[in-house]
Structure formats: structure tokens, C-alpha cells
Length: 89
Image (cartoon, rainbow, N blue to C red; front, top):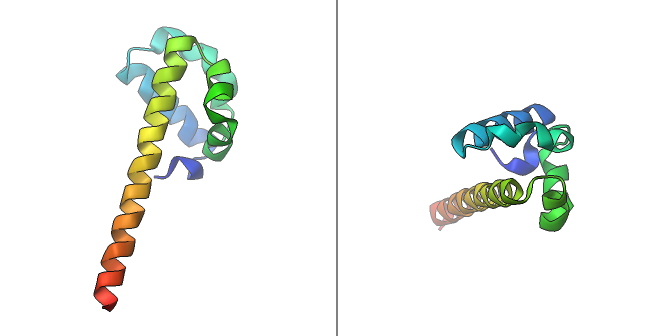
């Protein structure tokens, strides 16, 4: 799912997953204000503002993962556009 479409519940789930996946669980309580946001609001923060809400290395890891998820969604969208275009030609 596109991170821009995430609800607050999706964001909480992602933060919980990332804390476990990247061994960040000891700092998971420090991102409380981010866990209260929707995906589109987190992305709208931009990297620097996002990092100001998280411990240094944790913010970097989370932001990079968020960018990967966004790029993956863009790649999928472009793929389907190309497939639809070829089907019409």
C-alpha cells in the first residue's frame, strides 16, 4: 500500500514492524508523535522535520525505508500504466 494512503493505524503498524525488523524496539516509544500521524502527513514533513521527531539513527533508517516503499509504489504504478498502454496499442 502506498505510504501516502496510510491511516494512523497503518503508521503504528509500520513503526512496530520496523522497530522489530531493524532492532529499534528500545527506542520505539520515542516516536509517539509520529505514530499519531497519517502517512501523507509524515511524508509532508520532509526528511529534516521527520528526523527531528526521532532519535538520530532510528530516523535515518525509518526515512530510508519510507522512501523505498514510496519508490516501490511508483514503480508498480508505472508498470501498470505501461501494460495498459501496450494493451491499447
